[in-house]
Image (tube, rainbow, N blue to C red):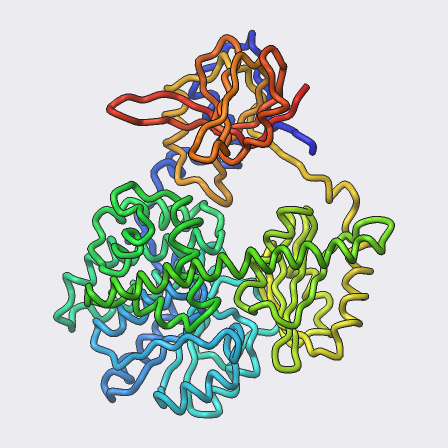
Length: 561
């Protein structure tokens, strides 16, 4: 493991806390501190702020919607089954519903229909609802043939998305709103808000929708943005900063009962709570069952139904955790057998199964990347095809890599560090050989060396409670704006285990009252002793309890000197 830092501060160096904050912002390439610390209210951001062409495109959208409403025709909001798609779909469907449109939500079956537009999904929509218009949410921008097929059935299509754009886009779509700076739910928020602005003078739900766009819909969009790991800069930072602040005000039964089921209803919601507690519950439904129940949970106005659905979602998430735990152990064993046959570990890991649930293969891939620090592709068999999820390390663009191998694939889409694709069974062996050969050329040994890059190498004498408070002003933290990290050296004066199972670690270092906490790092305890010098990578945290505040460091890594 290699540790590097962007700036070193010497013990003898005179530096103010504001100068430390300025260095952290510089590390994040933030040029306008005021704009970063005080982001624009999302309600004041419009679609045309993202691209000037959206103004004229949206005029077409309004014309189509006015005609549909006049003739009482049906609109279908066709949304993805992950947390980003479900929250975005909830925003757009409910907006159109409260505006008086005849509108239905549709969430495809992950196993039967796959990701994005599919002929099977379009046929189902045609048979169920015979709509005049389909509006997609978070479904990608690559399905040229499928959009053309929908058009041939007399269904108009409007696309809202944020995924990687490829060479061919669906030219038969009536309008495309593609905003990579946002999540799918973020695009849905601004798209729905624009529709509301154009129809709000003709409805009785004006005050309710005004309230939703300033609270509920921002909370939903913040869930989708964090869940989809969109960088928290620019307009996405605005959505999350304002969205997190609204959770305490939201009275929506679905959100309230998700929080209650998770045991976090009375605490301020942070990105961690969304990323590790709330979003996994929403995702679990789409992974194992029909995700329409997750959308129903977020939109229901019946509290009893919300409570039952929240409980069901919680149980589904527990089932998902059990499935993932078992499958990850199988994946590790498979890789162990594979690697035993090789002189060196492969630069890309490709694992296959005939029985892993399609809904959890992305989670398996993430766990394998975390353990072995290599791009990983996990495939599972599905009706003569293999469905795949891929996850990657920061330096390697997995979607670009897979697109370069597109000749082997049925379809492919994704982001820099996450992708999905379908491949015919007969092409799997050829694809694996080609992928391993190409990865071996593209990825160097240096790329596979796990690195920790911290913001500042700084002596403990510079760490204060007031500095920690200034750092809090940079929140929300997440992708694109990680919580500032520090590297320091110190001499151990005491160390102890704590927690019900003694699985957490506390350390105190000489000449500083700062308490270091290492959650689930009890395995390091045996190597620590009084007087030992250690290198430590950590973030700062303020422990607020009983009206008192105390400073503590949260340990990322410990290295003995």
